[in-house]
Length: 379
Image (cartoon, rainbow, N blue to C red; front, top):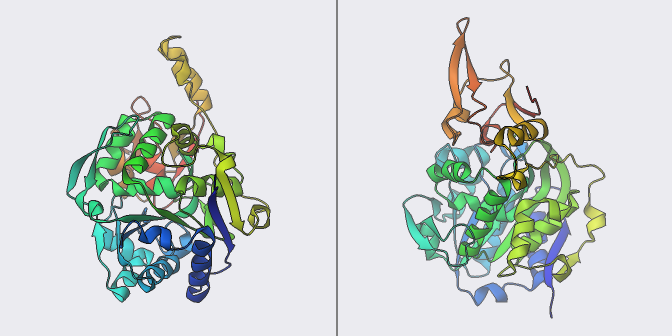
C-alpha cells in the first residue's frame, strides 16, 4: 500500500520567487497537480487570518506564501478564490492589515467573507451530524488549507485542520466553544468539520512560526519550513512533531487518527519526502504546556472535588490590568459571558467570573496586546 507523502522543504525567507519554487517543488514531491485536477478546477484557498496583524507578528498566513500559492494554481489552469471568517473584525479590515487584501486585488480573485450559512448534513460526524456552512464553500471542488505554524493555548498546536474552523461563520464560533468546553470534545468537533469539508491539500507556512503563547500572543520563531501534503492530518502530525510535540498529545491529531476514515489512521502510513525532519527541527521551540482536565471522574466523585482538582491543574486567564487597553474584544468574544467591565476607584477594568469561565481561552486568543496570562491559581 502506497504511503501518504508529506513534503518538507527548507525555505529561509519570504522571497516570492523562492517561496513559489519551494511550494512547486513540494507539490511535485507528493504527486503533483494531476491528483487535484481529477477533483475539478475550482479551488478555494483558506488562509489563517485570526486577526488584523501585520505579517511580522506571525499571527496570520504570510502574504508571500498566499501570493505564491495563488500564482501556482492560476498557472496550472485552476480557477482560484479565497475565503475566511475572522472572529471579530470584518474580513476586509483584517486582511488589509495582514497584507492579504493587496494580494487578492493584485490577482483579481474573489475573496469571500464566509456569511449566509446553510445547513449541511455530516453523516461521518461523531458529535456534529450537520453544520451550518457558508454557501460559497459548497461551490468549490478543492479546498486548500493555508495555515501558519503556531502553538495554541487551548489545543496546544494549530495547523491545517484547526485552520478550517475559519469556515464557520464568525458569530457561530463562540457558540461552539460554549457547547464544547471539554478539549477532546472541541477537537472532535474540528475533526467532524474536516470530514464534512474534505480538504484536498495543506500548505504550511512555517518559514517564521509562532512559539510560546499562540495563536496570537506568542513570539515569532524562524523555522525555515514550507510543508505540504494531500492529507492535512499527516501534515499536522509531522509539523507538530517537528516543533517538539508528541502527536498523541495533540487532541485534534489524536482524535482524527482514531476515526480511520478519509485521513490516515496511523503515523506508520506517512512517508516524509524532501528534507529530513531532523534537519529542520528547531534546537528549541517554546511549546504550550500539556495539561488535562479530570473529566474521566465525572459522575464518580462529587463535583466540588472535580472543580478543586481542575483548579490546581488547569490554567485560568488572568488580566494584566496595566497592559490592558480596554478594547473590549475579549468581552465580545467570550462564549460564556464570563467577562465584563467593572469600575474600582474610578478605574475601569475587565472582571472575570470564574464560576462561568469554561477555559476556552478565546479572550487570550483575541487579545491584541498580550494583556492576559494563563496561570494556575487555585484560590
